[in-house]
Amino acid sequence: MTTISATAQPTLDEVAAAAGVSRSTASRALNGGARVSPQAQAAVDDAAARLGYVPNRAARSLVTRRTDSIALVVPEPDERVLSDPFIGGTLRGVGAALAATDLQLLLIIARPGESPRRLARYLRAGHVDGVVIASHHREDGLEEAVLASPVPAVFVGRPFAATEGLIYTDVDNRAGARQAVQHLVDTGRTRIAHIAGPADMAAGLDRRDGWSDVLTDAGLPADAFASGEFTVASGHRAMTDLLAVHPDLDAVFAASDSMALGALEALRAHGRRVPEDVSVVGFDDLGVAASMTPPLTTVRNPVVEMASCAVEQLLTLLSGKRDVPTVVFPPELVVRAST
Image (cartoon, rainbow, N blue to C red; front, side, top):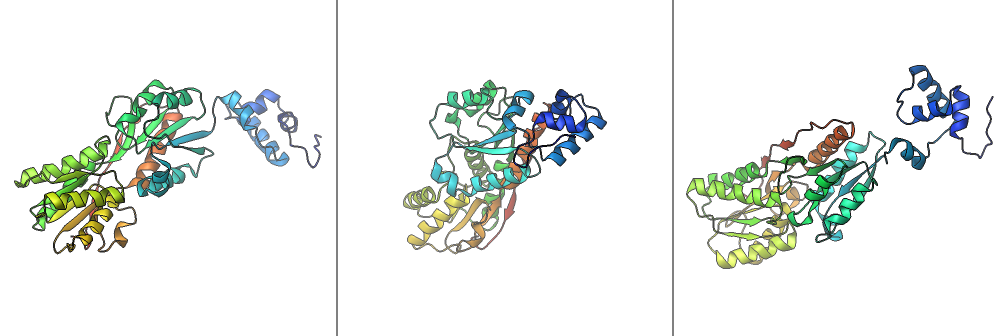
């Protein structure tokens, strides 16, 4: 009989002895079960449970070449990571998808302007088994870093250049913008402005294209737009600029709810009533929209579901499969009092 002291941590040798198998068989059984018979696997599992054996993660990594961890890379400043609803939704979705696994999550804040070579080196060093990337910008160089690394990666949101070999999940941003602007046209608005997202993000360009699509089809001018940064402050600034140049505008489509909130504040400051004088539509519906004054009409962006889907795509890649398709969710217009 194998005995251990009350305070000693059981060893792999003790598990093997208790199971009646060799040390190498016990190691394989505890690290995935490759080339282990069902009887031996059951014996090792039983012995490990009885002895309270906890595998040494570092030693296990040497055997399996796996770290049992994935990274969520968010190339945004600290303050936005902590306050942005999109990033919060992404974290919830990733966490939910990992709940049923033994994988640990690392959050990597790759600040804008940081050399992509640093991240590429990190990935090549094998610190994590896979990567989910969210809120990425064109100049981040993350697409090139992913293509240069053997570590599997999935993007939440379409990469700026959807190069072959890059896997992502997204919402149809252009179709969602079309729904938003078509709703404004259908309610009789004719001077519809746009507060656009960053031009170095695919979502910013796609939502701007959807806005101009509808206005062009309706024979309405598509010249009233200003750029923002998906923040409340940038939405306020853009709305103020638009009112100065286009005082006749009667509606605005903001490319995020945060920017729509800033636009509402600027409209109130200029004595414009919503929706009587100016209708406002946002994009995201991540919680804050329903509590605005007035409640905000917006396009639902299924961020939590997208992030969970990205993890599922990544897990499929980690299982050895390579034919993982891109997933694009349909948008949904949610009509509230702001229109």
